[in-house]
Amino acid sequence: MTGPEGAIHRAAAEGFSRAADDYVRGRPDYPAAVADWLRDTVGVGPGATAVDLGAGTGKFTPYLVGTGARVVAVEPVDAMRARLSAAWPGVDARAGTAEAIPLPDASADAVVCAQSFHWFATPAALAEVRRVLKPGGRLGLVWNVRDLGVGWVSRLGRVVGRVEGDTPRYQSGAWRSVFPAPGFGPLRERRFPHAHTGPVDDVVLNRVRSTSFVAALPPDGRARLEAELRAFIASEPELQGKAVVTVPYETVAYDVAKAESSQ
Image (tube, rainbow, N blue to C red):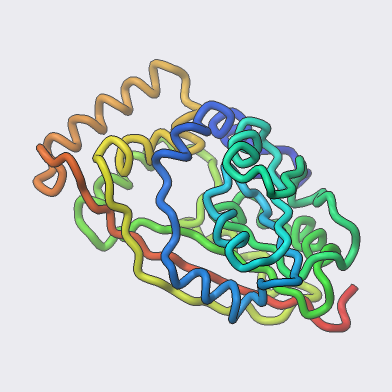
């Protein structure tokens, strides 16, 4: 959620402060296969320390907690962090950014960024992740991505994309430019099928409302976009008149290890 100098991007600072409740209601969870990926690939389990970096409201936090690891959640936006602490009071939730992680050197076995790395994909952030990781520790990156190969999902993406401005997004691929990274090995990729099923107000409207650049719009801009979205829902055969809908997703997961000899 931070830029090159460590400042929180305006869309994140304003949007996520306003949209914490929509984030909880509108964002999908993660597929069960992610638990195996955390254990077998990222090395998160009992006795390990895992950092949930850019943890938001804690959507991914239970997957880390479920491994039996000690979890430290780092989140710069106060409203998001408050929701995380309310939902997971046993988790050590700390204010911090990717460029200033509040942990000692070589203290973490894993750092995991769920729906967040595109906000702070900079050499400075990777250097800070490298600092807190133990030699051989892993950085994990996870995103839930709507399946744009489905016609109505692609059309929805175009409606929302018109107001994104300069907001960093996974879909741009710009985050990849920091790899290969000094002190890290090769980036590895996994993909898992996923879907988000629920009331149309949650899986479409609240999902869009939870998007940082949408929540950061002025009130009249949000009202215009919501009217456009409601018209879109009413016109799409896959959505119109349905109380419950399924949005197809794919979960993409990447991992990269800190070199054993890297400091």
